[in-house]
Image (tube, rainbow, N blue to C red):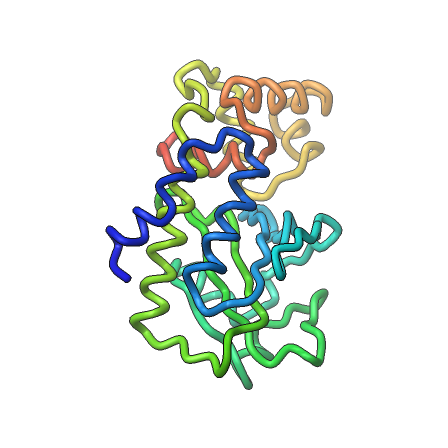
Length: 230
């Protein structure tokens, strides 16, 4: 399947306005196209290298995984993903390297397919699959095809209609978001800028409203992609 065929498969997702419905449809299409039997979507933030569960799909059943959270900073297996931004298949010793200090795959899991979701060059999440159709054979060609699917899907999540005008941000709002992207917490930012914690929180709230995004992670991804922070 080439890029054009993939685009045709997911083009209908552009017409879905509800974000949760769009995420479900991306996972459903992913399972339909590729030899996987499940798909679990995790939101990713470069702040602390944190992954947070969103939803999973298995046998057409939605599974909410919002309680799952882990830092991939201690996982050497994720380093190539962060650099290459390409789908990778892990088994054996490579799977062990993928485990983090605070998250270990169940003993019944023998292999994992990890697919980074990107907006431009910024990773915003990962799709993980644990069960496959028959004997998994994810060669370079198939992994490249899956990577293209994830690239198109990330673009759908970055619908321009969903992101507000970045030019309306004030200098101080940009400065606050820059410091957040570097891993500073509210207290540290407030101390450095000589303002209260509440003021920092108000700046963040204002940025989310102006960009029409739901959380800091998405806001930072938008600002990084547009080159407003770096």
